[in-house]
Structures are given as C-alpha cells and as structure tokens.
Image (cartoon, rainbow, N blue to C red; front, side, top):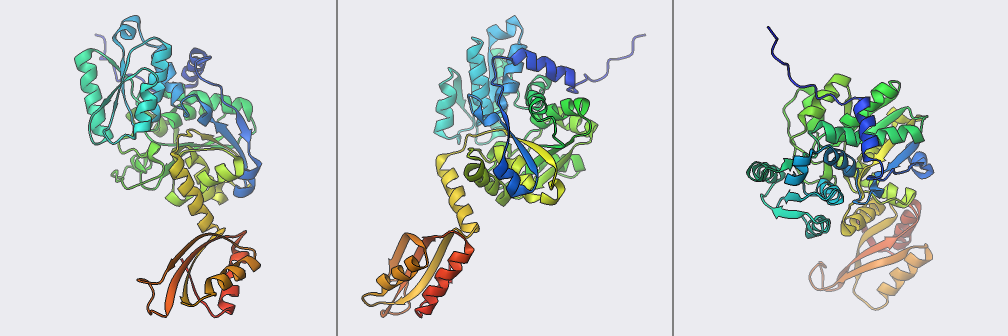
Length: 409
C-alpha cells in the first residue's frame, strides 16, 4: 500500500535561486554592490551596499514577481494575475505582467497614497481600492481570484517569489566575496528566506541575519514562539507586517536564522546617513539593514558586512522631515526659545551675536501678544544652522552674555 503523501516541500534552496536567476535575466536589473566609505566610517565596519533601489520600480520586489510570472502556464497567462499590495509588490507585479502581455489586477487598501495608485496603473494594471487594511485588501484579492479564475501572486508566501528574491544574494556574493555577515530587512520574510537558503549552501561561513523595526517584530516573535504583538506608526511601512509568511518562517526555522529588532530612531538615522554620506535615497524599509549596523555596532565592528538597500520609494516630504530631525539630533540645527525685553534694537543685537559666533538663522518666530508673560516682554523662537554642538554651545553662551534667558527647544 502506498503511504499517504506528506506535506509539500516548500524549502527554497540554492538550485531554486540559481534557476530563478537564469529565468529573470534580462527582465530584472542586475544592480551594483558598492563599498561605501562614508557608511563604513560611521559604523566601524567595512560595509557593502546592494543597490536594489535602482530597479525600475524602485525596489527588490521585481525579482520575485518576475520569477513567479515567468512560471505561469499558458492557461494561467490567459487568465491573468491578481495581487494585493499597497506599494512595491503592486508595481512589480504590474510591470512584469505588462512585459509578459498578461492582464493584472492589483487590490490596494483605500488609504493607499494616490501616487502609488497612479504608478501602478501606469503599468497597465487594473487597480481596485478595497478595504481599510492590507488584510481586508488581501481577502478581496483572494475573492477576485476565485470569482474570475485569476492567479494570486503572493508578495512573500510563495516559493517561486522567495527564490526570485534570493537572486540578489547571488549577485552580492559575486561582487563582494569578502563578506563575513549579511543583513536583510524583514517584512513577510520572503527576501530573507530566499537569500538565506542560497547563502547557507554557497557560503556557510557567512552570518545571515534579518532585521525588523521595533513596532513590527512579527518574525522575531514567531521564531521565539511568543504571541505576535505589533502596531503603531513607523517610517518603515514597507515591512510593517503582522501576518508573516508561513513558508519563510519554516525556512528560517530550518536554517536557524536570527532576526534583530531595531528602534525607529535607528531607521531614521540610516536614511539620513545614506542620503548625506552615501548620496543614496532609501525608504524606511530599504534602510533597515543599515539601521542594525547603527543600533548594534559592537556586533559588526571590524567585520566585512553587506546589506541591501531594498527600496527607494520614499515620499519627498517624509525624506525632508527625516533629514531635518537628524540635523536636530546631531546638534547641527539649534532650536532656541528666548524671553526678551520688548524694545527697539533687541532683535538686531541677537542677530549680531548669532552671526558673530558663526551661526546662520534659518527661521524666526517673534510673539509679543499672547506667549509673553508681560506686556514689556516678548517670546522669540530661533532655528539656527550650526556646524556642530560646540558651535551651538558658543552661540548660547554669546546670547546669555547679553543677559538673555535662553532655553533649548
């Protein structure tokens, strides 16, 4: 008697990743891996960056989408595909379906920014806005797949997608063979699972780690066997996942992969370091691997470390805010509140003292009617650009020497 068949083997191995690499060659950009002197000096490690933010849709998701679509049968191609996403996976599926001449439907939550909807539609996809959450959008996508006979392309819980994502690790190892550790951002877990599967067979000497942001450590919690508790605002919205992939989870458990959890502030610092130091634009999820180097410098000091800048789709306003917040934290923008006498010449005296100390006033708010405790005084708020905290302290000392009451904002 034939024994009953066991569960399907969903493990993604080096052979799967190599097959995916051959399959998607020419459809997906082979992005460069560069050594960054600025990032290395800031972290104390020798750092190599894989620039998948240079993909046509701005993110690594192209790899998995291209591989999954390439594996469709003729019948499935005629039927078309459906996917659920609020961002990078949506554009990746839409693009590679268009390149293959396949109809694509993308279900996006109603809150999805209009720019992402327009970008997805620009690839010829039919966009359906449904649900208040990703989970509700996913449920509608599955319903459409059943009702219309479409092939559902999961963003991370699919061995073919996982194998496609793993191709970036092959490229990294070819370009930077000296690597001793590799860091991968984790949302649903597809990229880490695919890359870890390839690396463990090719280079078992290399430490492979995942990285999650502290508000959404779902994979770390599942690996530890603890209840999943996630939520709250995060700049790393691309990896803000509650329901991780079961296929990636099994892969990471099989390989014994560790996942680090980084604070939100480290992600912002990583975005700023990439922009100012490496001259690279990264979204929050795309900078999370570097955030681990900033949050845990002692673990990587002196080692040769690689990480992927897996996405560059960040809103310009958010990027500007991150850079300004980082300037404040670094002491390169000084925010001061002064209680000043309300008489002629005071503002000119303050400006002269700031200028003499080398500061550059970039914003002034002068309030005499409501904020001041007396009609004989006024409240002044200054934003001053400085070189560093030493110069900032010198400016404060110069103002206090003029008998002004100064408070840091």
